[in-house]
Length: 450
Image 1 (cartoon, one colour):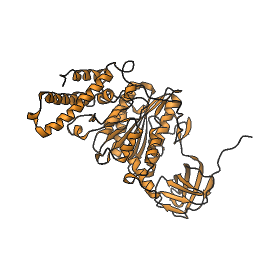
Image 2 (cartoon, one colour):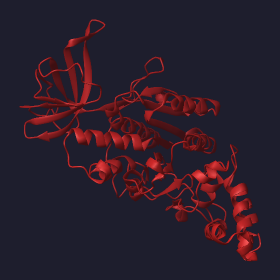
Image 3 (cartoon, helix red, strand yellow):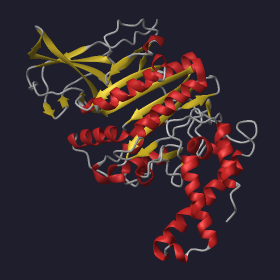
Image 4 (tube, one colour):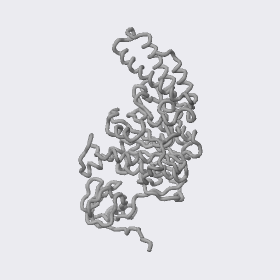
């Protein structure tokens, strides 16, 4: 006889405790971790109907369940709620027609367009990728940005974050990479954009950039705004990654996922951890922040049995420009390199202000060279890195001894540094092919050796 695994929905009339966005229920039965909960406040009416909010089970202790409510619970009391455990995890309805659409941080359409036909319904936490099927990324993803394509080449299926600071143009760089990705990849390209704690001008900027570049028809946006409930920020990136997996592994598309800002996401994790009374770790963040971030970042990748790929570009704004802060520090352990934006380059009008020396792509060596990019690409990248590292040393020396204390070789090093920053790193809004990038690199290497 076939077993019926459908769980019975159970409703509970009271809560034991309400603490911030958390509600605690006793004597619950057949409840599972991450199960979705609907909470109806019988006193709060909207348009003549009871107000219904959504939550998720985040902790189980025997017959006690702790539920995280995604919206505010100010109108809730211990006795005016009717809580229903839905017997399933949170899911996202998927279709190719979500492209060109805008959703809120809970996956609900907010663009006023008619509903789309549903092709699949998937749990937002995804499925672990079989390690025996996972491929190491080998194909370059060209961004049109010389500093990235030439010196820290991005790979399809890689996770490569942008480390930035307040006021730096990380949004502009991410939008530029997304537009170039669609241009070079073609009809198989999909961009999934997810914003956590996003300001309205930032959301408007990305939408306008996608429209102007013609990329919007191949893009889906999930927006948790700054005035939306912070608890939603835990859901938004998982919705985006679920959509990305659908396009990559159901439709063999190449998907670029942009997540901004992971700092806002991590702060939400910290706030909920504090509400649960957990022992804090570094700077108040919970000890499981590493594994929590890994559940997001590790969903990027390529598979042996599928032509699609999920490439991840998270944006991390550094609190106080501190690259040793727990968020970028843990992100760096999980991801395969980083793109660091430099405030000094930005102040000198260099765009994109990519600080080359602290930036790297750990998978670059596997995806460049003969048969993949130009044959002399690896050698040129090594030479540019080595010579630019000397520039930093000579500039530090000049602050001590002045120009008169420098040797001729030191002065040649400074000339190389200025040429490298103004001709190679700086390119404005223009997009360069890899051939153009390598040609500039050859010219720089041909300058008089130090």
